[in-house]
Image 1 (tube, rainbow over the protein chains, first blue to last red):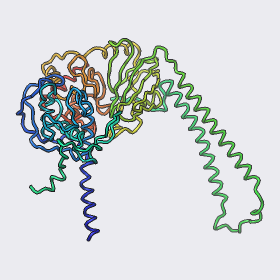
Image 2 (image 1 turned 180 degrees about the vertical axis):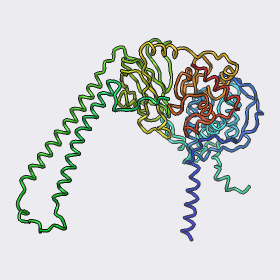
Image 3 (image 1 turned 90 degrees about the vertical axis):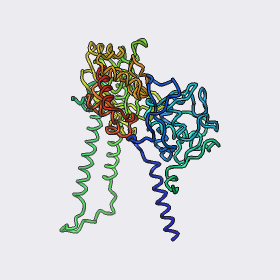
Image 4 (image 1 turned 30 degrees about the vertical axis):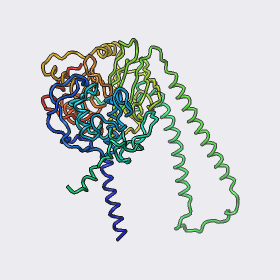
Length: 191
Length: 322
């Protein structure tokens, strides 16, 4: 009986690990956003400015919190789109830090998504329409990992470039950043 | 479409000639060794005692020492050492010949390997004379080309089989490779070091032109992108600068100045898109933009949801970038 239970647990653990390794290449058609209803909160935009409204997150869930590949993609995009230009490696410079416990506009996935898409006053550009939603979700997952908000087996490890601090998977969550409830855990909860 | 020459045995330049010569020396010596070994093996098999032999084997000489065996082993060892020495000398002389390519008046290019494409920067002359392109290298016939190599992410290897040997691109290190094309034509190149999912689709082309034609191409590349005349292409330009394209791509002379993806300033003048993966036609371009992962799963370019009308406008604009 004990052996069978252990076997079942082993199978469950193996299945749970599948999502960690999955590589989602095709952008999901439903990227957990609503209609184009929200105004931009910043006049700064990359490239040529877009008019019109932006789409906000319609659920407070980060779909890539369990996926190591997507979080690493988020880490790459964080540098490609020059988030690091203002927020540095998460310690902040012109822009606020992203790995401490002080969050001006909220540290939950929905707030981070909305902040990136809408922009915020005094500098944070509005990226809605410039970065595809799927990629924004990957960046959200990575930003949460910076403060230790993701599982340690999902968060990125050592950076390619020189960096004196701890890698993301060695950081413990700050008081303001709750350890994320993964999709696997949410699926177990009765609704 | 002419696929380009991709054959290391037919040398089209001095560097590939030296490498092909070395290959032939190795092939000849190794063939002689292989044939000799096979003959010896066959003779040994013939001389082995047989189960259906009519007479019992002669065991009279079993305890007599065999001087001839010692002699033959010594001879074989000596021949092996001589053969290896010959290969070593050939290798050293080839390296020396490769290093002696005259470099006066060379064309200087910086090539950077990315997952999974090549950026090519022409760095000769004043800054206003430099320009960037991708996945297509144009060179003048008869002039040496010095390529400075770098890697942006992982290890790649730069290889034009018909023109020169391979050179690895290692992140954080620089390397140079010099070659010369002696005849005009299109030569295919390929990444030769496994670099991830789409390594096989990380190709490029080298176009060798007569000097006057090369100079004409260079003048065209230095220029900024032309202003589109048609309304649809003009709308495509607006879109390109405002939606996700401009986050990574550059078109000189516009607001699109992203530095993470191939420079598209003269995209329409190139033969292929996506690092030699698809011929550069309007249909392929539209299909590629609509879903790059259908052609190269795992590529860093995202699929961007947009209406067919917007897509057609962007493709029309890219078609004007001669």
